[in-house]
Length: 316
Image (tube, rainbow, N blue to C red; front, side, top):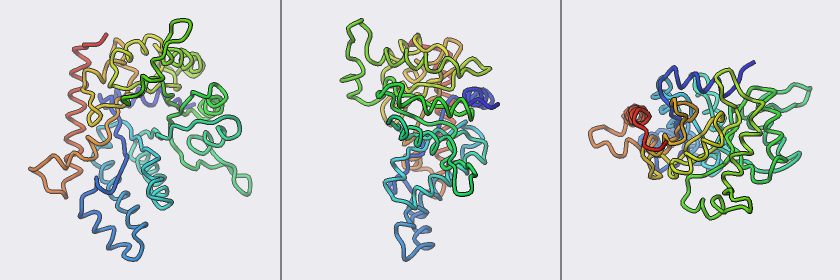
């Protein structure tokens, strides 16, 4: 049976690239010629035109990096922002990336309990029974991000799907946003920080979903903007995958981004979104029509910097 952690670890090793491309599209990120093309195809429906421009953009970026980047991470909010047509594009993007050999981490950060959590889990990484009794995947992601601060009630349905279908989850532990410490660094009565308590829970929850490569498909989100906390989080989660946001546009560099990797340089994957999607805006030597090449060049540069940082670890 497949195991998400094994799939991701092996794909990272195959490409020698511990990165994931975030696909969080906004119309302002898309070159004007693609906007014009979408308007020409849907001249009487600007909602459909907007969604189609996002699709053209996503497809080009996936084509540009699918042979060098292991995974994409579409943020659901940016598709919901543009309405139902863009949500259809989200599903189309997921299917297309998978057809190109990429894994898909659905960045949805769902959080609920009971039947509602089960619906989230089945809808995003599982399958749904439709009329006639057939069960089919609806969103079809390989993995999802979730918020576990409601406790095991909100996590158990996702664990069940991961166990049944070989999928994965990344649970928020120490996030990359500036105010994360307002809650996550609070000290508990026993002396632990809140994020440390969550890290220990993630380690426990993932103990039965370890793969052949030694990592659990129950992973954690630990931001690159807090390298000292990332080091501590890794100690508490020695066998959990870690998704690392905050690289690039959010301010973290390669040295900080690799803080949560194991001593042998494994177990984490670093996300970049705007720095990859909008790379073309910083390239005066390229025409807008070459935007995808700019993304590929930036992805190669990111890979090189991260691998160099892994060879000379500053946070251990």
